[in-house]
Length: 130
Image 1: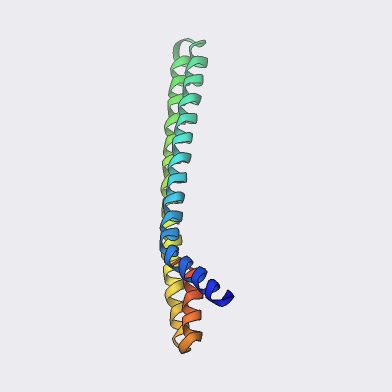
Image 2: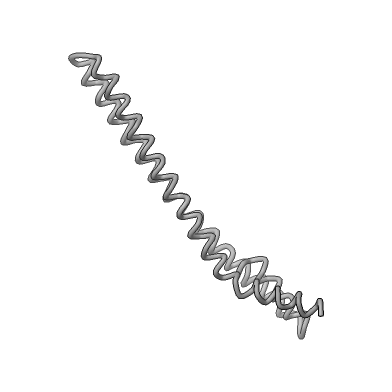
């Protein structure tokens, strides 16, 4: 009875694993977008504060201060966007690596037969979330 229950759990996890891998990629991408949104908000706030500080100045010093503030704002936004793309790219790379590792593990299982092969494949599916 315990063996049957264990097999049902393994089969249930194996069925859910592809969903899990896709969910993890989506979660990583969502986090990347949230970090980007937060960095944009921070950059905007910093820019507004810098502009307020520039109002105290006059002449060329004020112009330079405003240009510096704008440059820092654009730089922060660009860095946030680059970080977002990098995180999304990493999520995609992680997914592709899991698929490739799964295929290699599955190929190693081909040297086995019967229940041992089935167990090997099930273990690979669980390990590599396929």
